[in-house]
Amino acid sequence: MTTIESKTVNPRFSSSRLRLIVAGILAIVVCLIIARVIYNTSTFFSLMENLQMPWNLGADSQSTEAYLSDLKQIARFVLNAPKTDRRIMISTYSSFMNMDTSIHGKYFGRAVNLHLLQLLIFDVPQEYPREKARSFGAFLWESEKVPYETETESNMLWPFEYDHGHHLTITAPLARLWGDYYGTKEYSYFSSQFNFRSIDELK
Image 1 (cartoon, rainbow, N blue to C red):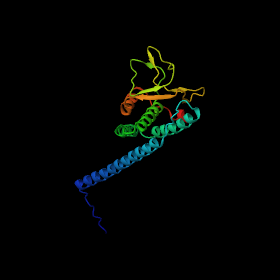
Image 2: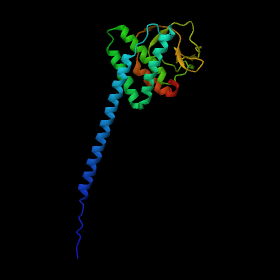
Image 3: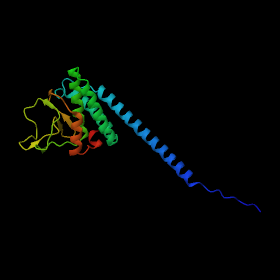
Image 4: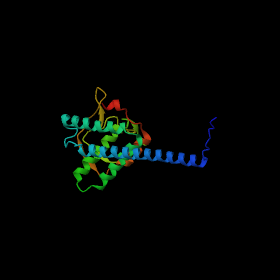
């Protein structure tokens, strides 16, 4: 007759081993998240730095359309990323932009690109109570009158307009930017007031 000896598992050993396994899994997850954020941020930087704002933006329909096509592609990339990554991408690029102001033309182009991008990724309204509206950069567009602007309502989406097919476009020529642009503060404000735009609207 064969006797089977049962082994008693030390509960302390089992608990310690479980903690090590959990810690290892958490470390892997954290590394994967960090790698994702680095990838998304570096890709975003590359896309934004390669985005060329036409000098005749809003005045020439062909160059404006090509520019907006590239800008919408970047907006779709941002919206496909997790919300936490979106904030990191915008704030990191905004900080980089504000540290490199030696060449005014380059700073101006980056500021316009980031501002217009944020108008795309958020569902910003054309009519919004003026007392609640905020501006984080004095961008000037050549237009006799801003559509939907009243004494009580502010057009937060300007210079974007919806065409007959409900696609966002720009028809007012860009003039200049007065002072500085605060992209991170704009993101925080938009995210507290508006929802993110649907990706389908940017196709």
